[in-house]
Image (cartoon, rainbow, N blue to C red; front, side, top):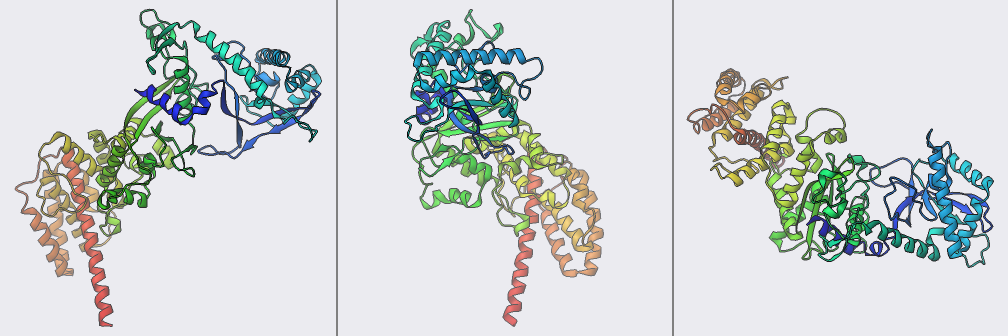
Length: 618
């Protein structure tokens, strides 16, 4: 099940963080520096260049800071030596909205009280210096004013830090939360508060581990989905906060019993998977892989049971030709990608819905099976490319496929954002899980074909997608229709396929007779010919006669060749179909594209022969 796989991820990749549950890594942009005598020594900015999608102001450098043992939505729950700006310095116009002054003042008082208590109980010199600092209002005000000049964000974290003035001193200085005494004190406090928080939930059998013991009353928040519909404060995967969600009188997460330790594990795993950019080590020490990709309002999270350098999702998303080619030829040369060992692959597609995490799709399979599915994905999308002399098309990227079925204008990112999430999920599960595409995707691709003009109608990305959909539907439903190849099938007599080839020939006839025109016969009749051939083709035949008459006069050889090709195709039809269903509309589109690609190939070959003859004569 999903939460078991997530907890296993934490055990494998986040063992250190799991063992140190009282702390978590967060970006901390500011350090409030204090001298040994408690004097304010300045504000130190701790920043690094932003990575991933976010640009602009550099983010704070990561620091392992105290983790709250309880939800901080209500009440006063200060952390030790590092907290949000409101707790550390209280109200100030730069970060305190009107009406929140008293709230921020109370938070600061709670922070100072807890810090003074820790200083007294631990007798730590750094904590004592900080307590002295807070006893001097003038020093605190000076810190507020200096930090205000840095224009901090309202939720910025501020760490208390010691300044090391004497180089011979054994005190290391730096952030106080890194001191062993401080960390030990917070760990004891966290354990006590965490146990008290879960005491009300009682005992039960953990759904993840299967062990009987204490149950977590509530689970920590999952961060990183605010850009996809989730609350900035975090979302919950397992939550029972309303009576309608509860059964048999059980309160909160007693309805889905998970031990506190396993609940922390799966949340820790999700928070790590949701981090943007490469950050997790692969099998090789020098390899860093990513675990998240956002597309069409959905975050796709992916990982392997054991570390691996394979990044199959990125292969689908980026589709680098050399990498795809290596994958496709591997079975034929008896090789496999480096590091591909018996392993499992996991993928979860998620989004935010207010305070909850929405799971759109989840699956796991062996890494070898997923590799095989990805190879079938790229081979199934291959099609002869009209723009490259009929050669096989380049492997399409995921965003190119989404654009192929989306309308409208604007920037690529904006257009992709408007694509329904279910379509992106269908592509990903077809590529990685091997589940066939259906009529929804086929209908969207054909709808775009009917409104496209000129070269846009010949996009190999869209036609390759049509080919995959038609073949998937036929493979599943077994209606007796032909499977479509990636290039021209000269002997295929399926009426829809033949009609598509005929339209391409009529367009070539028009071009041979008239040259470039503003509107071709394909532009004018494609929609009708691909749905109601019996209505469209008599009109096309009439136009074709006029074009043929002109071509016989201007270029006798070309007229004979095109007339012969049209005649050969007409002999395969007893009559034009009255109407084409969705799959046959796809076969029509493929026939049209195959014919155009074959013509491009023959033209290129003729040019090559002519150039060779000229060279030999010279």
